[in-house]
Image 1: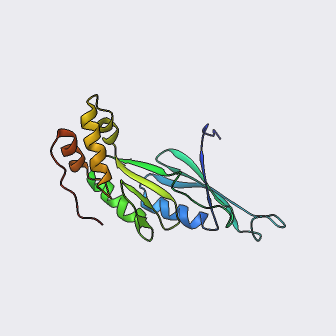
Image 2: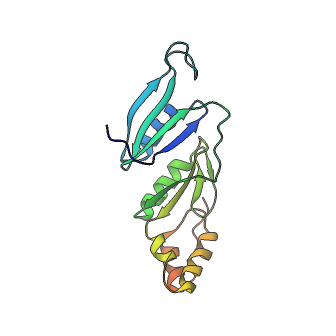
Length: 168
């Protein structure tokens, strides 16, 4: 089995399997690749308890671990999803934030406490425009949004005030 050079390890209290099963329902290109369980007299739980869940999202490998209550998620690390359409942004935003918290600037936390950024794929091009005024307008528009709005960002880039979408 070939292992990718860098892989994210996400440590949950005890919900690794529940979280990964949820993510494989949220994302079309997702699958569980393996589950390991605790043996007899091993740390991490009773015999048969889930220890790790390896999974893949859009070709990227991750490992979910039941690490216990001393592992806490913070906003300092997030999983960023680049979306091609507003429909994709809307769908992921709604599903991932269900039971979690909608923040701002395309950020949310899911019901497990994992931070996500749901962003349009075009954002990198808008933010790296050689004209600094255009990227500044885009950044100002982002700061006024919760869920990112592709058309609003394009209008800001073009110098037309973005129409803000209703907060959800």
